[in-house]
Image (cartoon, rainbow over all chains, first blue to last red; front, side):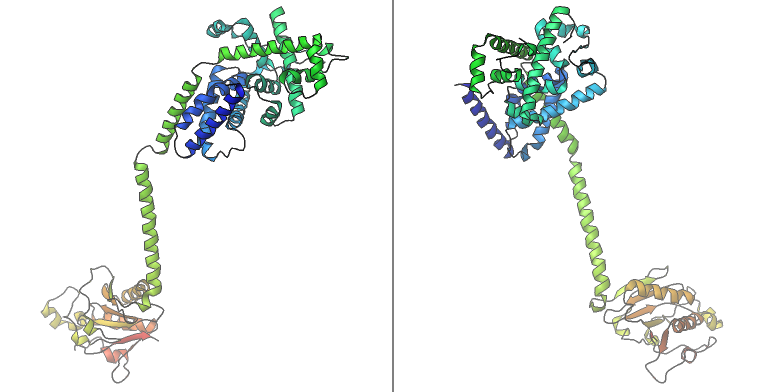
Length: 208
Length: 281
């Protein structure tokens, strides 16, 4: 069975589960959670960079979905719908964290210099968290740091493309922007990320 | 290869990204990217970045994330249910409130019906009490014909608590009362509501110094039968009060009496034998 067939099977199963849920079989929702939680978690983690925040966002997203699933009309796929909920929640969480000062140092936009083409990023010192330090390999850590250092719009586009493997058109719908914007954001985001990783490997400092 | 290196024959960065993502529909660009070493290197770098990102996410995604979310969701749903219905008392409370509202509405509807339908009612006379003491027995229907009552037919004398016959014999004008005086009050047709009649009577009786009375609203007309005990003076005052309030005391017999002739003077010692009709002037 190829990936297209698998995808079709998943869509069919999802439709059946939603129908069962609407007829009162609430247990069907459990299966939906197990099917989609990992994907949503990866998206939320990509947008927030925190395991705990990502998990809470996924839980909130499913709680909202549970309450609203009876009114789900199927205009978009369940996966798209869930993604939209999770992205919105993650955005809210991200901005809330930033207001509290947690995300201040991860913003690239604040460190753009005058001519606008050089980016220097100061990231939170994670050496105080030895458990995470041990868990991650250096490269993975650098990739995640770089991703979190990207501006929000670029990071969202990158996550939807690389993590969720969504098509340009779908990403544009999710982020409510044009396809051309998605293309330019992806190109820009990838360039910045590569630069950041190279800079980190060479100098040990996150400079793009 | 970087942004700066893309030039000349090579397609732009965005186009190469499209090629890598499988979103490019331009056959020429795809063809070029497949054979150009610079573009191939760029695309290879993209692939490498993609793998690194994928690894990073795989590494950070807990294997049991689905089960953990599920447990938390079940926990939240249970809490939510408990919050909505903390006890079964909640439903009981709702039912009680609903019952109370229905009762109040029903009672209100009954009161409205009662006030509007009173003139046409045919049920038994209702008894109402004016004053402080408890009502005595209702007036028998046969002695309460339309508009008149024979005082001599009524019950025994009441002396406002003083039953000493000697006292009565000695100063009858002071203590004598119209024996179980019953007056029939003919109210105006509009004053058919029991509470209005009761209010009017209360004023007339209190103005006459009569402390208490027992009144019955007749069902077949707008009559009110009143039983009270009073001295002659109080009774005269009551008749005057009725007249002053726009009610006239008339006798159906001969001739049209003046109230003093009718009731006699205050010093008169005789007992009365009379018929009364009190009606709106």
